[in-house]
Figure 1 (cartoon, one colour):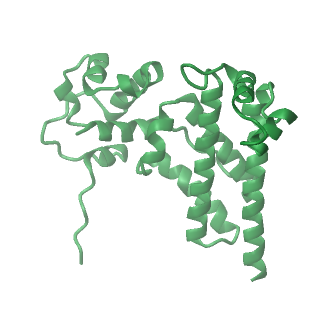
Figure 2 (cartoon, helix red, strand yellow):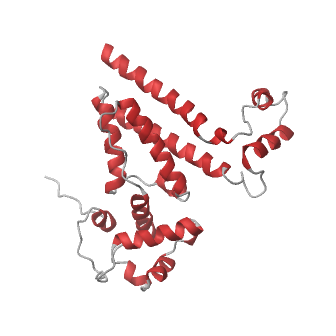
Figure 3 (cartoon, one colour):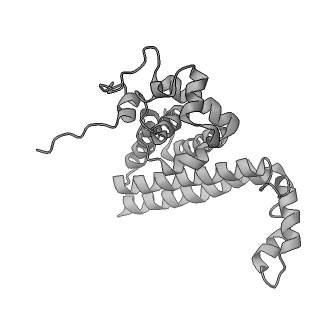
Length: 246
């Protein structure tokens, strides 16, 4: 029988399974405190401001004191991602569809509230208790609706990607498209109107002419989000129906 692999230090600590540290953790310092301090820095300065030295300075400890809890910046980022995530919505009496709509919306909202998460969360496999709770709740609802586990994983991944995309758009359009770009959807549409023509970009030109990009804030808020989410959930519902008929 294959021996059980030793958990990485940061993963063990996220789950409350204190490993024996070679460096000797500083009494009173915890992984939660370290992650909270790093999140404060990231919210204010972005990920560029998060360094082992800057986190240690915020906590009033030496940089070496952190290494009993996180062995690298990647470990620190993993802890930050899990700590920043709230608990997922609870299913209660919701149908699978109503729950996944609430799940995806909540996922989008917490990502948008910490823009730095959009840089790291999609690249960090869920390993902490909070991140895995989000995965668990979605899988539970989808398998309960009659889908196979592999299908439920693929659907959850798709909904997560949609939440990331929606949060990225919301964050981008809440300020400027880039440093030289126009502010808000109205400015973006005005810029595009100067760049594209019906010969080279017929579909985009027609959308601009119709006002599809619009000046209203709904362009990056609820209406478009609900529209896209409805399309995704319609597809899931069709798959569930086929499985039941089959």
